[in-house]
Length: 292
Figure 1 (cartoon, helix red, strand yellow):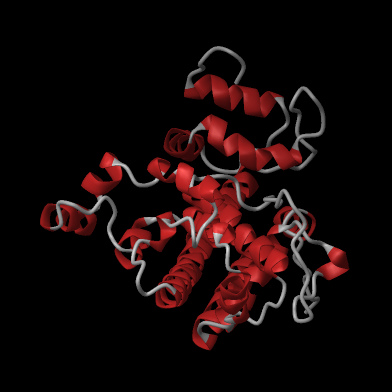
Figure 2 (cartoon, helix red, strand yellow; figure 1 turned 180 degrees about the vertical axis):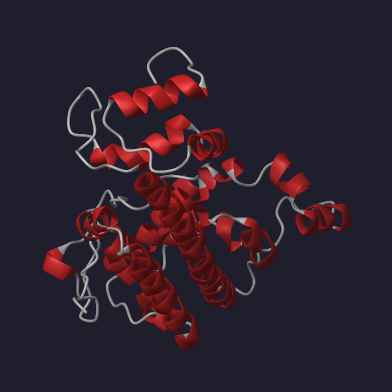
């Protein structure tokens, strides 16, 4: 859109001049642009641009960009729902196993005997006045126990983010505890386990912050496991991240694993009737589509 705001009519004129086929009525195009916004929708017609002047490939349809946008919305909603299930399970395992290992230290997450000093030195980034006021059980704990600087781990960590829980896990000094937690998901290597969890944290944050999902690439290659078979050794695509989510669900709930697999495949099949979308699904998302 350049450096100056433009009105809807001008935006429509720009799209026409760049070669986009506006295959909805004029009023419908205006409605969609008012609803989603020219700038955000641009993320979804960008794959069809052919030069630095943002001209479109011949035959590019406005409806294809809109369908890609809604595919992204559906993917975002779907993935965050199942990642939340994994997040809760991971948090529960960390809290349960470490708390029972150090029964006499209910606030083990700030104990130098349990976690690295570097983590303790930065605990105030997570546990501060805002944290205590925003989370009612923590606020009530401090109201009741005036001399406690921190609430016990099973209360406190319930309100930490997925990324913060991974940070605590990584900061644990006891390697055996780390191995026991990883073993809950049949992962032997702590390094690989952290990579896989971090993959889910990355996808979860992308979904939560409204990022574009269909062409999401993990910054680091996803670690391999005997039961994780990536197509053509692809370790960065959205499809590979979905395989990681399915792997963890398989160790938590078989029903949830099946549910995600069916819903994800259903979304893909639903959008493959548009040839342009099908190509995006194969090349950007990394999906391997079977011919009927």
